[in-house]
Structures are given as structure tokens and as C-alpha cells.
Length: 601
Image (spheres, rainbow, N blue to C red):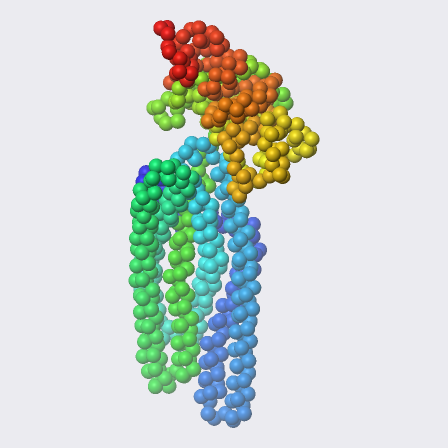
């Protein structure tokens, strides 16, 4: 379903079921089962300590406080003993609870670390079509907010729910043992509580799903605004952007209020049921005391146990909110983990020992959207060491050829071969390691110039300085006080468009690829910078198969052969002089670029 602001979200994910989601989560919990078992054991001790306290109160009242026929010193001694036991149980409960929290927090952090790692690794394996349909803000929400929600569910709910369930069962057992008639009377309240909880759970699940959806939309919108803040300010779109954000924020606010209204009904209902239970205990238990069928200590213990009984039910509102929010997040996370929008990899991918660099496009057809072809029956070859230039108007399919060669996408029909081997049979990681790609937009990572050139490579300073000189970056590096260790990117200096292009060329040269691809590498730079880039390109093209997409005549003329693209097909090919003499589409494009009057063809 498509929403405003170019955002897509899955609104109906409730078919997977809570149990299935919890089973999926247990796949990540399983490696830490020993720590989870320890937390459960500690929870048993916490529960035992809590259930002992009302019983001690009963023993104190019936055995000593109300036992007037016992000597005073014996009553005092008995009360002291029970008081010490009471204090000991409270201290034991505190110590065990402290250990349980430590174990849960440590285990929860480890589990969520594994889940976050798995999700991030999975994201990197998805193909480009997935990222074209899913905005960055949404994916960031999955890796941050949604993971945090699941962490809170584990640390606050999973083991404590077991603890509370055990506590409720223990209380009911003790109450039946103490007075089965009163317990049976109170049990008629349980079906009503189950119905209320089931109704609340259904409404809360839907509310939290809506909250997650609208929060992801806000994140996506903020990411888009921050990325394009310069355009917003240039075209004075601040007011319009603010109004659109207010619309998103207002929707999120209303959805959150709806969730608050649900809890506003549930919590008072539980309080009413608790008060009704207390009224029944006082009415029936008081009558039993008057008939001398029950002691005051038993009635006091009953009241204490019912307070303990309703305590986890009162907290259920908070725990249920965490559970429902986490399950809504789990739906998103596991749906993303189940996404298989990735290119197939051969069962035994090929990694040739040597790359000559022969490229063949054989009858290739491709479309990004069904029914809208971008490449039509594309047929051409690039010989080893040859430099091929591709020119054409915007939308003619030039960049799509690069995407197919890098195997970001697979062709709908036809084959793309490298040294006679279909790209689909090659190891994708090996293939991309053989192709050096320099794009118009260069990614700069926060760090030094050295970090941006080498990335994950290791190179001696002597080799790196030779590389810097070859890529025409020496002038920039020499003028910086810290040289190659100067910080760029976030928190560091900003580079010009031309300097970024030179950096991208140095990054490619450091990897010494067999094939070089330049996609508008000289676009948007001044004439002086273009001269430096041309020298760097000349060094990069040497002894490599190269494909160059460019509009600048100086770059195109260097090519051994030029392909002219129009609407996804090759309409002309040849050298610069041959194509200019033909006075076809290439001549027309060059004439428009250089402001030359067209002669009749």
C-alpha cells in the first residue's frame, strides 16, 4: 500500500501469529539457553520468597499475636523468630532479584546484538530493487527502534511472565489449601478477567502496529528532509515541509492517544475486579471468622495473597504494552529477514584465476518495472584492454548497462559474459572485486584521506604516496597540515566535487581492478579540475578494459570505440571521427553540447 511522501509500509501483518513470532525469537535465544535457564531458576527463588511472606504473617498472627493462652516470653520469642525469617526472605528476594536483573540484561544485550547483526548482514545481501522501494528511514527504524522494543520485551517480560505465571499458580494452590470454599468463590472472577485480557490484547496489538507504522513514516520523512535540506532552503519549501511533518506527527499523536484510551479502560477494569475480589474475601471470610470456621490470620493471609495475585495483573497493562509493541516490531523484523529480494548465486560459483577483460552483451533485455523496457536486445563486445565510451541522452540506458555489468540486476533475457563466462555463474563478490567503478556521486566515509582511499586494504606509505601522485591528489594532500591523515567527511573538511572524483579514482587504483567503469566521472567540475581528472583517468585506463559514460568530448575522444544509445538500443557505433562524419545522433549530441549549428545531414 502506498502512502504519502513516497513511503511504503506493510499495514497488515497480523497473520503470522504471536506464537510463531515467539518461536522465531527463540531461534536467537537458543544459543544462550544456559543463561536463560539461570534467570528462570532465579525467578523461582524470587517467587518462593514472595509467596512465603503472607504465610509468615499468618503464622505470626494465629500462632503468637492472637494466641493469648501462651506465655508472653514465648510469644515474644516466636514473633522475633518469624520477624527474622521475614527479614531474611526479603533480603534473599532482593539479592536474587538483583542477580536475575543482571543475568537478564546481559543475556538480552547479547541476543539483540545477534539479531541486529543478522538483520544488518541480511540487508547488505538484498538487491538494489529492494532499496528502491524501501526508504532509508524505514530500514533504520527496523535496526534501532524495533530491535530496542524486542530487547525490552525479553528483559522485562519473557522471564518475568514466567515468574508471574508461576506466582499466580502458586497463589491459587496455597489459597485452595488454606480454604477451598473461598478460593472456589473467587475463581468465578477468573473467566471475566480472561475475557477482558483477550479483548484488551486484540485492541492493543492493532494499536501498537499502527504506532510502529506511523513512527517508521516519520523516520523516513525526517531522513528525506535532512538529506535534501539544501534543496528545501533554496526553493523556500520550509513551510510546506513543516506542514507535511505536522500531518505525519498529528497522525502519530492520534494513534498514540488511541492506545492510551485502550489502557485507560483496561487498568480501571482490573482495579474493579481487584476490589470485587477483596469485597468477596471480607464478606465470606468475615462470616467464616464469625462462625469460627476461619482464623483472622488466614483471612489476613488471603488478603495479602490476593494483593500478590492482582499485582502482576495490574502490571499486565505495562507488560502487555511492551509485548504488543515488541510483537509488532517482531513482525516487521522477521518479515524483513524473510525477504528474499536478492540475486540468485550459483551453487558452485566460479572464481577464475585470471581475468582478461573480454565483455559480451548478448541479446540483453531488461526492465525495472514490468512492461517498461529500459534495454532492448543489446548486443556488443568489448575486447580485452579496449576503452569503450557510451553516450546518449538521459534515460537512454547508459547507467543500466553499468548496473547489469556489476550484476546489481540480472537481465530479463540474454546473457552478459566476462571472458566467455555468464555473470550468473560467477561469485558476485569476486566479480565486483574485478570491476572498479567511479560514479558521479562519491561516497565519503567519516575518517582521514588515507582511510577513504584504502578502506579495508593495507598499503605501505611509499606505495600510497605513489598512488596519490598518480591520481593527481598530491597537490591537495601536500597543502593539508596533516597530509593523508587529514580528516574529511562528517566532522572533517569538505572536498569539492572534483577532489572527490580524484579520491574515487585513487580508491579504484588502490584495488588495481581488471575492468574500469567511469560513470560521468568528469561531470560538474570546472575546467582546471577536469584537467587533473583527465590525467588521473589516463593513468587509470592504462592496460585495462574500460567502459566510460561521459558527455565531455575530451573523455570520449580517448575511447577506442563509441556506442551511441537511444531508448535502450544501440543506434550508432564507431570512433569519434567516424561518427561526426556520419552526422547522425552522435553529431547532434556533440553539436548541442558545444553550441555548434547543425549542418544538414
